[in-house]
Image (cartoon, rainbow, N blue to C red; front, side, top):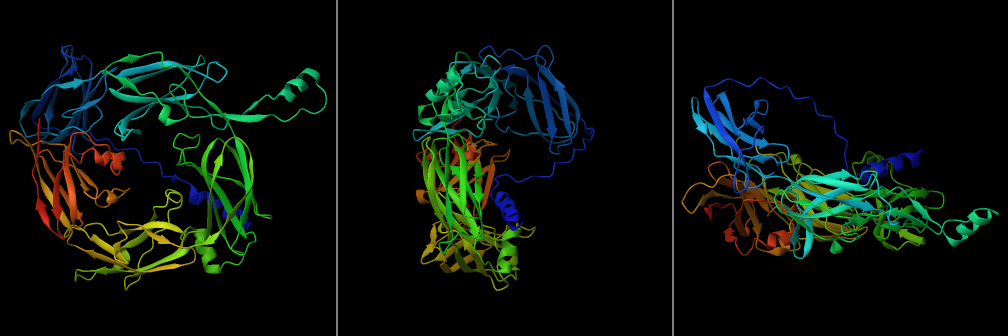
Length: 591
C-alpha cells in the first residue's frame, strides 16, 4: 500500500499540467443604450483596397458583457448606433481574411481603443484585412505509402542568432492528413514557417528480420523475435528529424504554397534498465524513476516527463520505448527509516523528496542495461528577510523558493515555497544538489502603496536573486540576507512620434545592459504596453543600468531569450536608475 501511495504521489508531483475547474458560463447582458454613433469601412489590404462585403465587425465596451456585432454591407460599410460613452475595442474578420483589430500594426496584435463621448458621431479610419495564406502537400511513410491521420502543423518562426524560434505572437495551425496523406493548412499570416509532422508516438512498429521471413515461409517452430521496433518521429519539412535541417517556407500575404511533400521518419526504440541505490548502497524503501528528453525535436519534447516501471524488491527499473536522443533519468526516493513527520510532509507534497539522483544517457536504438542511479540527500538553504521600512508588517505574507538553474533540474521538480517565521528567518530543506537562484514573492500592492520591492538577497558578496549559488548534498547554505523595501525604482513617461503626437498602444521594453542578467523570469526584464495617450509606467525596479526601447511588435514567449534581447541593443537608449529613484523618459519613434 505504501508503494502505491508513493507511486501516485510521484506521478502527481512530476506532472507538468494541473487540472482546473471548468469555468462557469458567462452571463451575457443586453448592450446598454446611449446616444453616440460609430461607423467605418472594411477594405482588403492590397493596392486597390476594395471593400469587403459581409465582414463581421465586433465592438466591445470596457466591460466584456457589452458586445455588439454587425456585418458590412455591399460597400464594406458598417454602423453602430445608440452607443453609451466609454472606451471600446473594434475588430473585423471575414472568411479567407485574417482577423484584424482596429489600430493594430499586424493581424493578431492588440489594437487601439476607440473612446466615445455621449452624443458623438465618429467615423473611424478603415480596417484593412489581410488575406490568409495556405500551405498544402502530401505526407508519406518510410515505405512511400500515404501517411493518414498524422498531425501536421505550420509553425511561424523567427531566426535569432542563426537558430529558429517559434513566434508566440502567432497561433499554431494544425490539421490531420486524410486517407491519401494529403493536407492543407488555411488562414496563415505572412511570414516564415516550418511544417512539422507528428505521428502517434505510442504506435510501435516492428521491422521484419531475415529470421522472420524464413519462419513465415517455412512455418516451423516458434516465431523469432523482431529485429527492431520503430516509432514515427517528429519530422520537419523536407523530411528531417533535426531543427537545423528544416526548410523555412516564406509566405507572402494571401500566398498559396503547394507541393510541400515529405516523408515522416521512423526511428528505432530501445529499453533502458538498471537499479537505484540508496545512501547506504542498498535499495531505498520507496522510489520512482522518470525520464525526460533534452532534444526539442525529439519524439518526447522537453516538457514531457514519463515514469518508468519499477521493481521495489530489487530496486530495479525499466524505461521502455525510448527513441534515439539525449535523456535524463531521475530517481526520487525515501530512506528505509524516514521520520514520521518527514514521511507525512513528503506524501502531502509540502516538501521535496529527501533523496534524489540523476544520470544522463544517450539512446541510439540499442537496449541499455545495468544503469545505476545513486541517490543523494538534499541540502538546506537558510536565511532571513529584513524590511527596511518601519511599517509593522506580517512577514509570513512573504515566501521564498529556490529556482533551479542547473539544466538537469530546470522544469523538473519545483521546490515548494516556504514562508518565514515571525522573526523573518526561513529554511528550505531537501533541496536537490545543484545550482539555484532565490525567488522571493511579496504580497500584492494595496490601495495605499505600490507594493514591496525585493532589493537584494546577499550571500558571500553576491546577490543570489540575480546570480546562482550551489547547493551540495547534505550541506547547508546559510546566511542569506534578503532586503525588502517599499522604495523601488520607477520609470514612466510617454511615447511620441516625430510630430510630437502621442504614439499609443506600443510596447515599452526594459532590460539590463549586463547580459549575465538575461535569464528566464529575471526581475530586471520588463515589458508594458502604453496607453491610448502614449503613457507608460514600470514600477518596482532595482537599481542598475538598463536598455529602453519602444516596439510595435513583441514576442512575449521570447521576452527573456538572450538572442531576442540582443537584437534591440543597437537601437535602445541607456538609462541608469538609483535605489528608489523615480525617473521619467520620453521615447520618440519614427512613423
